[in-house]
Length: 397
Image (cartoon, rainbow, N blue to C red):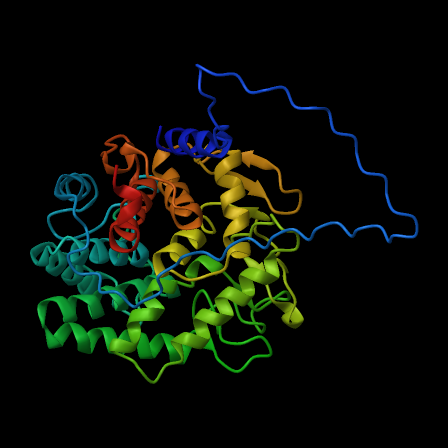
């Protein structure tokens, strides 16, 4: 398993201690006289205990790197396309009744750019335009169901899907020099800033999960935020198409919100958080869990090359505790309450350990897992792209 292989290597590395100085087998050291401790001088003040040395800062690289051509695993990309993308360019969520959504289209478009596969990118973008861009603005309907007509029953958007598609288009415009991609990316990015970002709040720029349903006017515990919608690596690249938007401020608020959830040194963020009265609490009506949403937070941190040691520490503690597999955690108690089941999510554990302490990635990171569903397989691919793009030393033997 990917997670087990990662943690075993990491834990072995932690268990190693520097070897003692070796003694020449031909000679024996002369016996040393026993030493008696020196008597304390009368009137001398007791020595204060030495202060612990501060942990070194993470060696992160936060340059805004281009995505195009960074995926150097053609067999994995081919397997991913054959399992999850139809000939028309629809990404199939095999673990969720074969629906499609803006998130999946955005992720696959990013992977197509990373693989320098323009033909597949065109199919993905074409299907997205034809089937999900059915609102009366520039945002994207979040869900499409193959067994319903019309396929889009809920016209609400999902801001992470919008951001992912805009980011993919911006990267495609730079890689292939297509102005139409840049124009489309700009329209979506500006609309995101206009409709789902609250820039002037007491705690910074708040990214709402959607246009409807998460404002303070919509819920008693609102506004509601999902930290995994803060796609940090996208915020570093969207100035290519919308430089007037305060993407830096949005990034900083995301980091500040992560700090708010760290009520203890190893506390993890929940999938959904309430910011009622600009104070943090797990959102009502959602399980107070670190789960399938929040597991993407360390992926985006490491992919963007941002954050401090204390912000990674809770995720790294989970990597060690679960032998790299990660788990579902009750954020109130800090206890593991379930497993993710499929090993692809463990790739985020490998990426976290790489960013945190330079751990080498397990060989399974470059292997295809044909039995996995869309979501873990996608997170596996994204973690691999992030590592190849920003941490290649973790992939070297």
